[in-house]
Image (cartoon, rainbow, N blue to C red; front, side, top):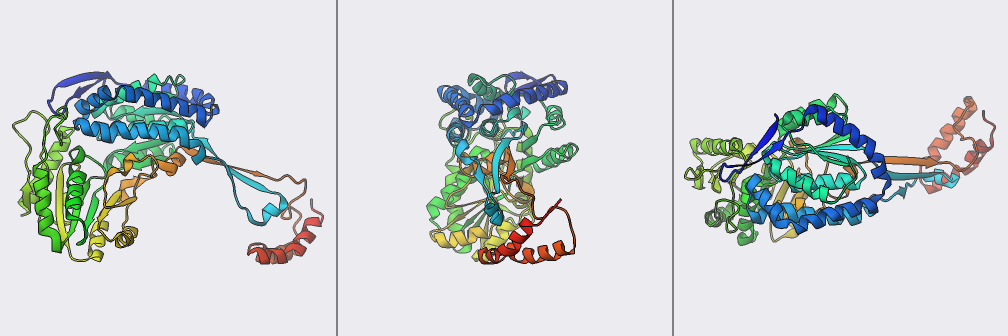
Length: 513
């Protein structure tokens, strides 16, 4: 591929062309990044944070132009380009510019009786070196720019390979970080197709963060294993929403509609399964359908539009297949259900389904589109079992007026995040961790745990005393018996350790090699 052709998914018009990065160039860029990274590391957290604040200033000064690029390249409404892409990155840049030094401060370990011998073990966090990031098309600005910023502020050099489906947003990210005037080769944007991504994986980067599908994630993991490259993988979800009988019906139905249809359902944390207590099931469905029908579908550049097009034709076909299967198997389609054929773009209206169960692909497999199956349950234990019956585990939500009951249920859900009376949005909080379990992947982005993913733990142990340790040579039967007695006491609590002091002192003063 010599260039990437960008198409507006709302109009199918060509809106830009981006030169692709060759595999040879990727290796060259990684080598240059490795050479530049040590001086970047030496700047320290505060100095690196200044660069993040410069990027934030440029982002906010150019907010309208960047929102326009996100909407025309990805399809989401301008409102979501602002609230779900630009706002979270502006918040994240400010947070980590100011908070990373505190979050990664050095600290001493408690090392038991060894402290009595003046020993000290200290933990610091060092950057990994060169980090590769392969980002997706569904949130092409917030996911990519956020991970780039976190890796940079930790002291790494970074190469970003964005999705070729949203290459123009990748160019906008490059523009934002270029405006911050980072040192040469510390941040590099490498647009391209899968061959560019594979070259990045095979380049010997110190870590790779990948967000995408399970299938591609498995390929990334296989390729990375050849070089023992550590990974952070976020591979999607099939996120459940549990609505208890005591939930606020108006709030819960609004949450379900927004959680299922925001970004045209193309969100790893979309509400893709909604379990509603049987006593309020019919009323819930009625309210949700009414609210879904009130949403306006269209070109995201129209400020009144609620739902834009799907981003790719392949995603449109995937959503259609799930709905066709559900209809053929007797499910009820309450609204939507067919692509909008009177428009040029990849438009599919919000669709609500009942009568489906866990044998249906629309309930079992990730849809990644504006489709909401609603399923009744009779009691909390059944709802938990249904929610956990999935190959994915990114987020889940519980809707209830009884917060203690919601918290009890939350502890039993197999996901990385559980929200109570809210859904989807915590990726926009830079302070909270993001990631999941099972086929969703492993590792975390955002928050303290996200910073740890871009650093290595460095342990320094210091012995200030010029004395030979009691376990050094030379061995004999007396050593063995004496140390066996010490082991019984030194590995216990303070009283046990105190009882060991006479024997410990005797061994301490005995001659050794």
